[in-house]
Length: 588
Image (tube, rainbow, N blue to C red; front, side, top):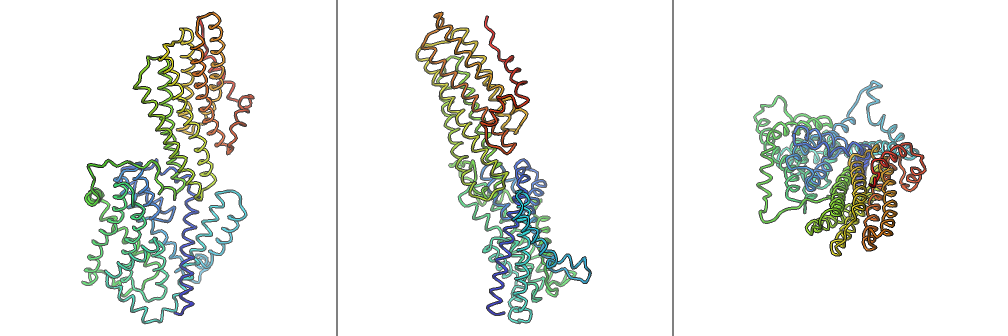
């Protein structure tokens, strides 16, 4: 093997890693909508968690990425440590899929159908289709499909390049002697661990081993400890990711490591003893390794490890608590939006959406409490609660806005990008709703300090307006929570009714002022309250319009609202008449 063969080997490795990364990104984007459902699938049932981890890892082709995602979930408080164990175990098995894909390089035969199954036959076709999809198609999903095909083609070409580069080692006695040393199980585990830790991908590490097996100098016996070490080495990514995270997040990464270390400690000695006693029905040291036998060994080890440790999930959890102890004097806080999730945009956006709903609930609770104070005796404690609540909403806006800006620098599908833009619009309107709660409280404080009060007629009118605003807040929140388009179309008619109630109440105040039934000073307070209540309904209208327009891939909210008010949206007139009757002010 000369210098040029070494360069060819590194070229093949680079293509292999790049192809794997491109294919993984394409698969992740293509499965974006399904990935968003991952949060709803979280369960304390270890079997369901296992299947979830298996499925996600098979989709994104990276157990490291899945485990980092799990660490982020635990750190955010949206997954418990116990829930994470099953997902981690599923991820361990899911990563074996890549090795099976690479066994296609071993297919051989004279039949036309067998020849068509060889990568050298179909990869060029996939590469051409992938390039056509990626370069000449405008639909995002087709581009993502093209990316998957291109990544797969580059991956397989890289594998072939590595195999060709090392083919000259078939006749090398020195190379054969090196792998004879790996029959020492401890050395094999160390080598597998170190190589995988460096390239941070067990799939790539197994791929390299499969390429080297083409020399015919490696026995299955030498591969067993290397494969065990590869499973330990892949834990490095999650361990690095958990640095600075909460204790439970660090425990999740420790469980990932302990699962592979403990399984190696149990299985390797048993395998070595049985092999030395010639109890096994086959002599692995006498069997030449190939991509197929390596895939079987790789998957077999994982299945045996699962059989041993899956019933022991509680013990793994207890071990994690023993190694990473709680500090009774320090209360840990969960992270609202974990930056580890940025690597998986669909999941990060779903998390942002969940936090946005929490923000909306806090803002609406705040403004409802403020409106309740209008007709109740002044309460200093309630005022403090509302002011504290408004500060919480401000923090939400700052956190979500900053997180979405960071997310925008990552590669996203058009659907995810639109969802991100929608959330940025929404948090602005939600924050303004919370601001109006302070303005309303300010008016209530002024009434208390100046000993002002509504006349009975004005109070009745204000109660009707508050009831209408309360309903528009409830509808907006439900629309946001469930992305309910049927509810969303009812918001604008109700907002128009609120506008007309405001105009009517101002006219009524002027009438009462002329009859000396009200004071100018009270009129200023009432005007401020009416303005703030009407502005709250405006922001609710913006929220509903944003959700409706995003459903039709159009962010021009003003265009939509103009269409609505022009009567071009069919449901508008029906709901407008309904709310006009429901919130009609009846004077005695």
